[in-house]
Image (cartoon, rainbow over all chains, first blue to last red; front, side):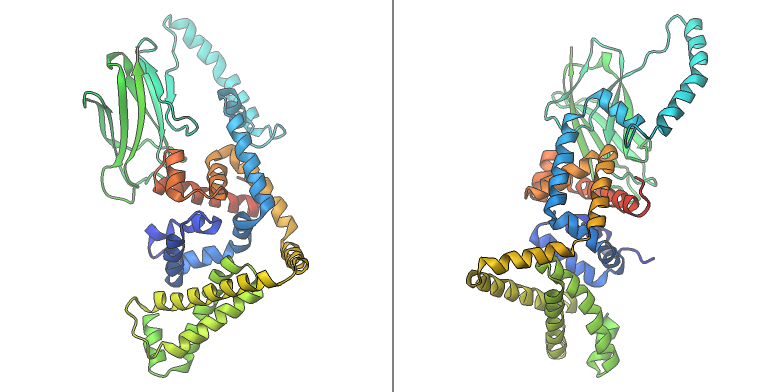
Length: 228
Length: 176
Ligand SMILES: [Zn+2]
């Protein structure tokens, strides 16, 4: 199969199909389609389906309903439920698999707990990937000494190493710097562990950028707050 | 394309025909995206290709052959839309209803049902896809959507293209 001749323009593919581009970008992409066989074939093969997404009122209304429902059901318990039962309550496979794993590791875990008086504590996780709130995610110094911070980078380039820094916006102090981060999962999610107890209260920036090489995307910045 | 163009300019009729066919399928796709009606789109694309072939030998391409030929098509589409607007002002509302009914009859109901099911399934794994589509339908520009979602344009396109891959998989195999 032919490869896109200009991936920077080729990335506009689905935005073009669903009408998310400005007229100038539509023209840029269509001129690209004049010489890029790969993109042209993809657009042509998906034309009928994309047409429904682009202009069908019934489809648009359904998308609106899905989006609204998604906003409402975003509690942690419903997230877990969705994870265990991704499509409907009638598809039990993942849930059964988790149940079996619990059955197998449960006794071992209980044994471990009995033998260790300071039993294993789950780290608190601060999720920076949510887009539904403009408020800062907050890490509490008075809480657990360590916290996990979760972030998302889109499509991580598996051939690239990423440069991560956590910098206090007020003082400019770098509290964490990792040059060779590669721990993104298949969905582009990554996590770091922060020793919160040593941090001063204030706003912090987590910056993720490619350390060079590969085709990794541009720098991404998340912000969060640290409070007493 | 360059080589084909050189051969056509030197009088090779087969090369000229190849250019015509090459442009025609692409022009038809571009026209259909704006005009919707398949037959009219084909006519406009053909007209644009005929104009391109009538002029390409004498034209000096300051912007390259592709962008120049594309400009010819855009002009034809623009003329058509302008003409249709004027005509619409003159025709009765009854025939308007007819043309709308004709359009919706073309839509593949089975495909639409499947598409709606898949969009629901995808939202369980990738809720941002429906969010981006919804914002697009509301007429937000790319940079406004990125600002609302707190993401870069690069990530915006990634969300869309990933949604597209999931949609294709779901439509082909029924799984997400
Ligand atoms: Zn391409």
